[in-house]
Amino acid sequence: MTLRIGDLSRRLGALTLLTGILAVTGCAAPGDLRGTNDLGIIIERAKGAALVVDTTARKPLGQVTGLGDLSHASAVYSRDGRYAFVFGRDGGLTKVDILTRKVVKRVVQAGNAIGGAISQDGTLVAVSNYKPGGVKVFDSATLDLVADVPADYGPAERSKVVGLVDAPGQKFVFSLWDGGEIWVLDMVDRANPKLTKFENVGLNPYDALISPDGRYYVAGLFGEDGMALLDLWHLDKGVRKVLSGYGKGEQKLPVYKMPHLEGWAIAGNLAFVPAIGHHAVLVIDLLTWTEVGRIPVHGQPVFVMARPDGRQVWVNFAIPHNDTIQVIDVPTRKIVKTLTPGKGVLHMEFTPRGEEVWLSVRDTDTVMVYDTRTIEPVTSFPADKPSGIFFTDRAGRIGL
Amino acid sequence: MPKTMVLALVLAAGTAAAAGPTPTRQAELNHLLIHDCGSCHGMTMKGGLGPSLLPQALVERTDDDLLASIVEGHPGTAMPPWGPLLNPGEAEWLVRRLREGAGLK
Image (cartoon, rainbow over the protein chains, first blue to last red):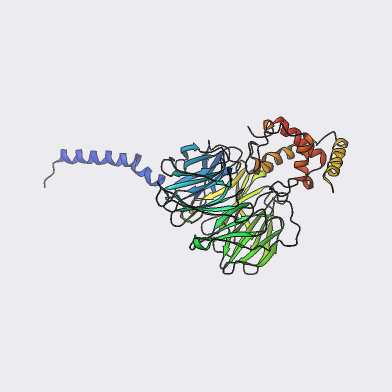
């Protein structure tokens, strides 16, 4: 092919122009593209906002506002790790795009809510409500209502609902605080939800969790010592009471903050759970569901969370001991370190593989990052009354 | 100890401390009210696991009754006795704050 000079210069001109365009637009794109698996949100409870954070850079990327009353708030993630569904006290369910840091959609679906869960396939988001008591299920794409399950028990009574989790088989499992029941909601056919109820499971279930494999649902009981256990592989066997004797003969202390069971610390065959009304962490053998040890701690535990590798368990406490964190070494079951990050340590979250843990310290308006190997602070940054911390790796985990 | 006796003591001590909490302590108590009471009753006091504590929700309750709830709690429910963390004048001050409308707006 022959090429005339005029042609060539035209082509070169076009090429230069094209390169110029690439420099302006195309080349900017790789810098904007990013994954989300090292991101997360931190609730700023008094402001109705959330910080989007980067756990690699260890800093906030920006703030999302307009999330309502977040006195008690939690979040789950879409299965692509891009959208956070934030559940607020005011019954608000807000879908947040953490990449653009914008509210995609918000519905106020009840008067008073406590938490939520996302289905196994990621298509449904469920919210547990105090008022009116029950569970509502929404389409995760549109936030359109899919199912409404009032927590009716006894004659004309409605219960507050707690301990809502997702379970394999497109199920949601939750507990009735007032009713003392555990319900399993099967959403395989979203037009015809199937409900299985277990009555008389114990007095005032206050929260619940599901084992990381999605098999065991365990509700803690506020009104009595012990926990209610449901094996989701064998619903026909019903709910049984375990650990009934753990506080026997001891005076219970006043409980100034309801413990949480989310992120129950499971390390090997052992589970570490807060003892209600006692300054103790209980060690439970998961093969026999019996107490095999009790670790005296600084105050009444609120969150008892295992580092992802199960080697350490970190514990925070209820007021008046909420300035302290204790770290338990799992093999020896001994407290290896007592930290005082500041008053109002409300929550902690491990990075996906556990090399660091982030703590929200409400009263000092600070988020602190600790190295879990040295148990020393790495960095900190300001946040307005920070509470729950939720990293996106929750997207891939059952029951969170 | 009978309930009436506890109350009598509380009220007597409260009168003795009529000056009320210092401004520093008031700030701490406000914080306690919003964030710790707010954990169950909502930071706006509209209710949660515990009932609403908005002024209009408390019209039927006497000051003594509210004071007793704060100091002694409600055994058998999730409401703990806050007496161990407060002195009597402080509990009275909290009742006044609730009457005024203490929650976040």
